[in-house]
Structure formats: C-alpha cells, structure tokens
Length: 75
Image (cartoon, rainbow, N blue to C red; front, side, top):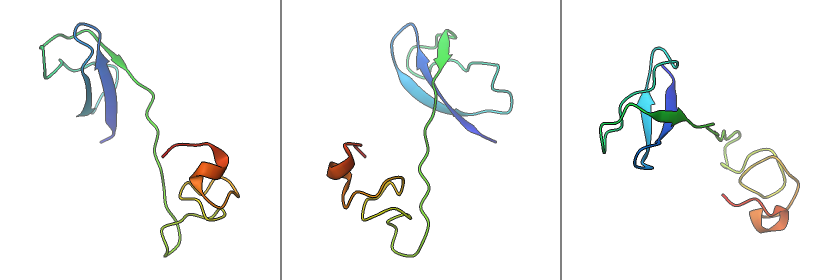
C-alpha cells in the first residue's frame, strides 16, 4: 500500500496516510476535517555501499558536485 501525504485545508496540518484508494482523502488527525489536499511526494533512493549515490560526492546522486552545497540542492 502506498503512503500519501496530505495537507488539511481547515487547519494546515500536514500528515501521511497508508491508503488503498488514493481518491479518498482521509480525515485530518488534528482537527477531524475531511477537506484535505493530496501533496506531491518526493523520495530519495540510495545505491552502492557507501550511501553516497552514483553522482560525485554528493548524497543526492543526481549531480556531479563534490557536495550538496556545490549544486544548491538542500537535503
């Protein structure tokens, strides 16, 4: 089952839910409202034994910079 991220339109609380049908927005655990917006989720994957990914020395593996400060992407 995939995990979806939501933001409650009533109180602004961000939360995650494990869902069978992504079309049904769950009720907010903070205020109980059923008015939520599904957020776009991002994910990170690591490969290799050193945990650094396949790029240069950065942890994101998507660039050739020697550190994350070099490419401007915050982790």
